[in-house]
Length: 264
Image 1 (cartoon, rainbow, N blue to C red):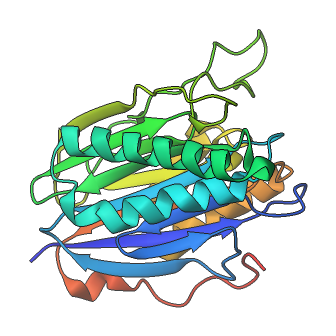
Image 2: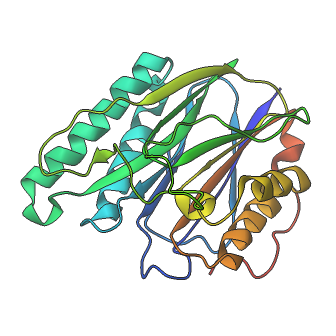
């Protein structure tokens, strides 16, 4: 029977003094902390399984509060996320919750976060995002790495691959602003691999490098190499990622010892 494995990692990078990223994998959450090594979890295929990352908006207060609030809400709602509309409704709930918390505490005014993730169903995967955190698909075939999320950001300036500006987020303003999430459904196949990550990975690391790493390594080794690529590129931001693999059987839950010298 097919299983889902989720290999997750979160690290502040080399420039930021703390981590404003958060992550959910089913009921498990990782909020504003550091993983010493990639963590791999196994889940049966069937019930809705949400895997999401959230990146607190830099330059605004309490990004780690906003990101943790969102992933914890999504983790709690995971069993009910069985359709695109359910995902849109959940993201609306998260957006309203961020604004409600900010309204209750003046120190939180303007806090906000991006979010991106997938909901794995029995035969399909629902992909969603708000902001510029991303979902990438490394197909089981030899097709090229494919971006399946949609960045909410203006086109980058000439000579740049990315832009630091996001055009929508959960929260992030002094007054409530509704969101229009990007949500799509795709068929799920055995051997499929998705990468869900914050821009601390995708800004410094080109997609062709991500593609090479994802095809050369399994599980924790791939997560470590992705993290190392971002660190080697200067580690300018918090780095949070989750690799989702659809595998044939439980014997593939572990791919051996993790590489030494990982995030600390």
